[in-house]
Length: 201
Image (tube, rainbow, N blue to C red; front, side, top):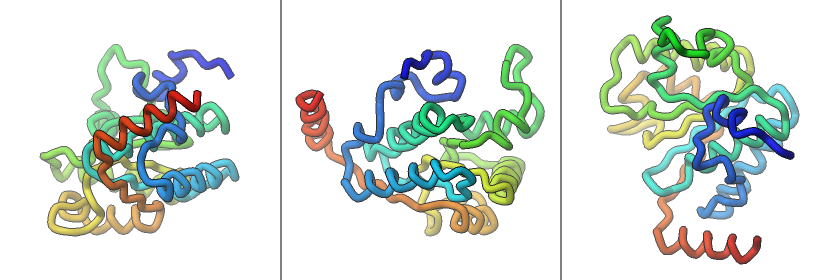
C-alpha cells in the first residue's frame, strides 16, 4: 500500500520511523508478542485498552509505539495523532500558534481514535499540566479511546508517574492500559538484529 509521507507526518509519526514495523523491534520476543496481541485488539474496533510503554534509553519503546500507530493508521484506518506533552498543554489552554493547522483540540487530540503521548517525564510539571493530563486520560477512558504512553517513568515508586502527577492519573492508566516494561538493549544486540534484518530482506 503506497502512503504519502505527508499522511504519516500529519499523524505526528516521526520521519525516522516511517519505514519501521513491529518486525523492526530488536528487544525481547515476549514484548514483541505482547504488542502484536495488542494490535489484534485494535482490529476488533472499540478497544478501551491503551499501552504504557516504559523503559530507559535504547529499549525500543518509541519504535513499538510508532509501529502500532502506523498499523492503526494504515491497516485499520483509525485516526491517529502522536503528540508531546507540550502539544497537549498548548491545546488544552487554547494557545495554539496562529499558523497551526491543528486548531481543534477536541478532534485533533481529545477524541482522536488512537493517541500516542511522549514526554510525560519532563523535569518540571505544574498543577495546570497535571490537570490537563488527568482530564485528557479520564475523558478518553470514559469513551473507550486507547492511548499509548511512551515514558521513562514507572507508574509507582520514588520517581514515578504517581510522584510527578497524582494517584488519580495513575489509577486511570492502570485501569485502561496494558503495562509493558521494555528492558534496555545493548548496542551489540541492536546491531546483530539490524544485520539479521538486512539478510532477511
